[in-house]
Image 1 (tube, rainbow, N blue to C red):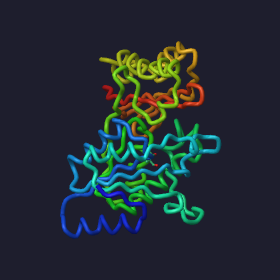
Image 2: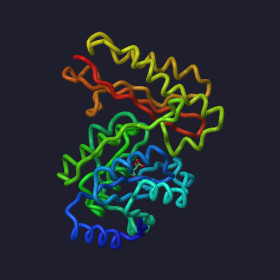
Image 3: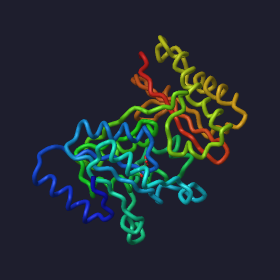
Image 4: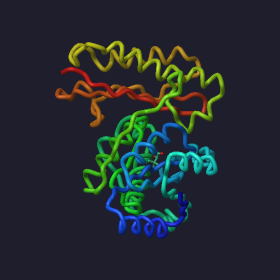
Length: 289
Ligand code: PAF
């Protein structure tokens, strides 16, 4: 496994690989502090690609003022061990100066799919994500890029960007990995106190309750409001939970559920704060029309 810090170095290595091989290049972009969810993306990339590139870069552009950019958890040593175990070939770990040597004058901004959910509660967040992912795609030039569906809105945004800008990369969405008790894996889980960690189970529990409620029903036999109330009521049984959003939308368009008559796929998307920690989770479901 090689660890590279500069764009020139990374490009040279990918180019050298492509010169000698006709196998695909798989790419897993991350902000580090890797957990089993990331490892599953790397394993998937390993099983489908000749060369696996992992990037670790905490991207300042996607954090708003007062968010956790400074204290975002970092552990390069452990990350490299996880990468090595997953069979990564190249780890790209650029500095902020390497990625943004001069103030950014170009922003990639995806409309519509960014208006709700995290796009509404974290203004500018998806501009930061789309801009850095588009830069990383230009730097790495992968054939496939692997993203976790825990951030399903991010997947929808990246897919839209790739479509609109004709980027020659296939986006591979991968399932959310969960702890044994159902909590979705996230680098931010480490912020939780034991009490918050216990109460955070209401996220996955409420999604399971919504799933059971929908089971066997057609899309016309329930409303998004009914589902939202069901989910909110369960989340509010946790005294420390503060709901940022709990919404039912069509996926991947992220339009209101009722307005989209042809939909068969919906998302129940949650963002809930426990103290200073904001957790997201979701469930994507097929429903009969
Ligand atoms: O999902 C993440 O970790 C980040 O948003 C990403 C895609 C690496 C861009 O910084």
